[in-house]
Length: 238
Image 1 (cartoon, rainbow, N blue to C red):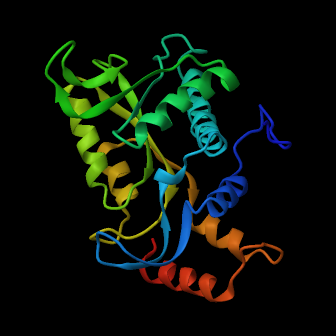
Image 2: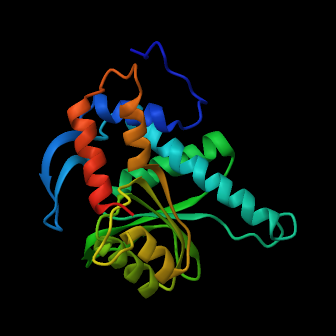
């Protein structure tokens, strides 16, 4: 049955997304060992964005951010003349539903008819073959959607796949920015932005989460957990 609070044209809200993530255990607290070996007091599991409500809200966030960038591009290309078509790309496997839902959200809420595609983990040896599905990315500047960038390894693989297909990266949008140091003093997101010379945006970052948890009337407020988050942020944050 339809949810009583369903609204078809509500813009993305970081607070709504954080609360929905908390309610559905997408954002969990405890002790989680990361690839870096660090013990994090929180974990964001995008694989649990497994309902229409959650996927729709995430896609709306990606779509709103992309529409803003398209508007900026049109403003700098003689009122849209010569503006490139929008191509969006999701990395297998989590990125596939994200990019499909975002293409729909762009059309439904912004009237933008984006082309979208994704990669396979293993190249197909029959039919059309290859490891790319969907939009033809050759010669295109492509926006890449992802959930969280930790070390940046997976995203660099995506960049390599696109470059081998004759595409370039126009920008990257992630759901959550941990704002955490990599091997050096910069975060993986900052390093990617500098190395690729493209914008790397986030719908929500860890400071948004900490601020939301610190709100006095918040139902998930926990002083001990909040202190752990703040300590981890101070130790590893950028």
